[in-house]
Length: 313
Image 1: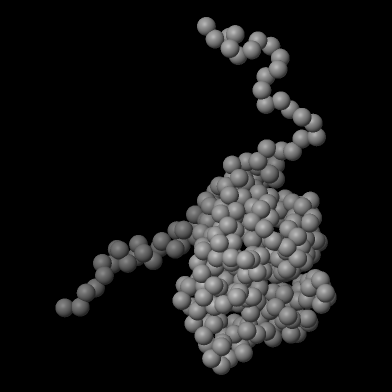
Image 2: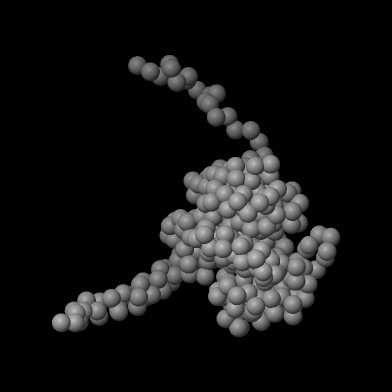
């Protein structure tokens, strides 16, 4: 005889998503009320503890806070090894590389699939709103994902984002159902316009792409984190050393995205592991609560009063 699920169990399963949704809404309301009663720094720390330690992109949780690119490696095997060593759950892929087709494109895509990672296609190389939007639509069709790392480049030498075109392209794509990961500068005004357009993720650079300079405007990045506590922030581009990645996570950034620093290292696989450890260390330090910097010295041992050994009976 055919098996029929028990009605009560079926109804229970059906109500679980609605129950979780109501609970999530209550949590959001509670957090919103809490924000008005405590400082921004305290609220941000509570929010991170509330949401546990998982990274979240458009409702999807990920365990790794390191996103990694798939270009510039010495060989496909080293690329695979580096991605595995990084522990990354998300890998960026250029549409132009995949769309090249032929045996090379098929082989590359096969290697990515073997890694069992989430693919984040990008619009790298696009220099106009129209080109970026068209590339994003092709990427959605090719990779079957609403995710797009949006890049609109203004200058060929610095690869600085065209922030005006970026906001325009983001608004168009979001209305079309995309979940946008915009690559931008550290400008607060631009980030706020992207959020107003519907972006739930913002990806400011640390420095120009491939420069390996690390964070060159710490105060601006810190201001972004303080002013956008509910937005997932990812430092994207310009990181050259694991210590740079740790610095970004210590500032409270949710994740970092990098490629060249690993791909162009003498040993990309070892460097990928180093970045993995640095990201974990930076995040742990942020959650532990870093002491504030001081303008003056403060002794770590007592210099006034009775020495501690005299107080021992």
